[in-house]
Image 1 (tube, rainbow, N blue to C red):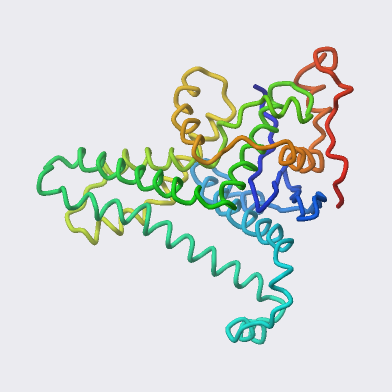
Image 2: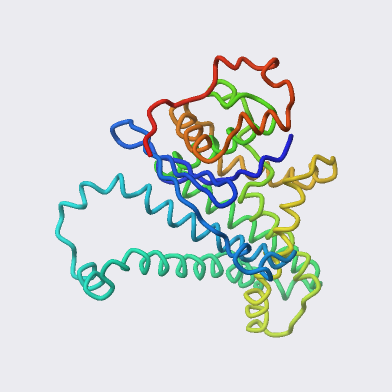
Length: 329
């Protein structure tokens, strides 16, 4: 595999793909048309030099992905709100409109992000600590307690994914997630970007956010083996305070794994790839077309293949080149 530099995420009935500072969100509307929004987003790691330093950049890269992800998710959802637009706004919505005016959407988005972060910290960092605490009287070893807490954390994460994947919208989002990975894998293996080649490519990828979350949970076990405090309140505080540090270290591991073809990094990446079996599903061809449309809007894949895979045209059926054909910007 040859690193392409592109990445993305699934949105509601679509895909966002990002290449450097340019991103494109492609959405399949209810009438079947693919609509594309192209824009730029300059990351915090580019704006502030300190934020781009190793072990620091991971924190702000994660924040960037949340901000851009929420922005593109909101845009994609706008195509499925027609029925709600005919209804009069409620009292709370009217209050927000009067209070914030045109800024209401960004205010709501910020509030949702903050709430989501607090919920994630509570469910995936504090709750496992509290559950593990019930076993402390039976397990005197702090090392064993750190492993138990980590195992509970991973178990809660798996259960959470299993539960939400039963929802139709989430299941379809996981299918789009699979199409995102398939497009990137297709290109990074030197294949022409078309539906047939994308379909047969892997739906797991080493740079996936799911792998990042698993790495975070594993790295947290190692940290909490070393960081030992006596009271439950200090343990809770330590879990929260160390989140940026753990995220920074985890990002460097993921970054190295995503750009390396070494056998050691492949072994390290394998658990994350297995975990992606929960968050990616096999897409249908219409979803693949959406992903291809997003890629082609921000990435010159032919030039990439020329540079990284000389002679690719002779090894591929270039007449079967991609194209969903019905995208609009």
